[in-house]
Image 1 (cartoon, rainbow, N blue to C red):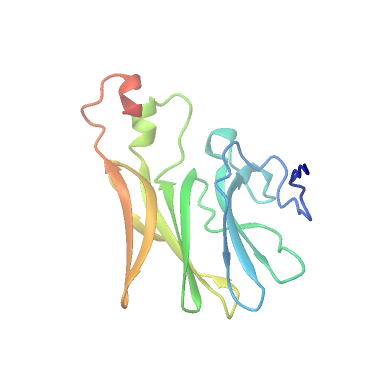
Image 2 (image 1 turned 30 degrees about the vertical axis):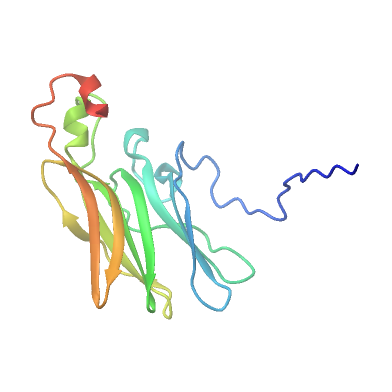
Length: 178
């Protein structure tokens, strides 16, 4: 009898950001000609221009692989607020990126419910040919908890769907996880 066992080993890896975040939520998609794009949640306090505190540190970054190297990660939109649950999709010569985006900077003294009520949905469009990221577009900015955007295409129409939760009747912190 012959017994074989496969042992996974990384072939190659590149550290894009040390101390990125607890939950980086990375997404990689192919672009063209061997190029790729990654988005991930990183630590915005590591930016040279950042005045963020640790409470508002989670920032959505992107990097492009040119077939040899990854570019230095940069924020998709650096508005100084918390970013979370990103999604992205290649549509023609563009990459649509959407994410949950805190509507304002928060502080630790706010109740959890009040913090979560400030999550809106934003998106940006990356042009694959020019390599340029467009400005942030706000899709939802209200007093609901908006999370987990998903990007879909049907014919010529692009849709961004997301979860919207009304927390106005929540009285206990434990009820926030339901």
